[in-house]
Image 1 (tube, rainbow, N blue to C red):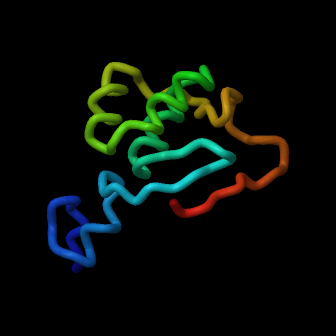
Image 2: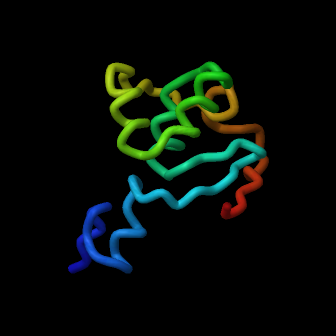
Image 3: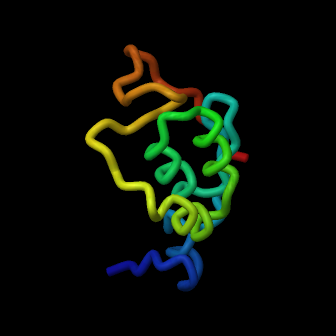
Length: 91
């Protein structure tokens, strides 16, 4: 079994949502996967960009009061982006 706790030991810790594995998705820079996931709670593209820019634990804490909705939002639109794959690159 592998423990992917963010404060765990390398190399397993880099698999955590909270680990600062920065990446860019459709031109929006995310500091961690947790920041990206928490940003999906917001329908506002501006707010999504703000949350993506936060480190993992801060992003979770910042979006904690916002409840998950049935629809997730990506790029300011409800999930199910019209048949296109996002452009993702590592930073």
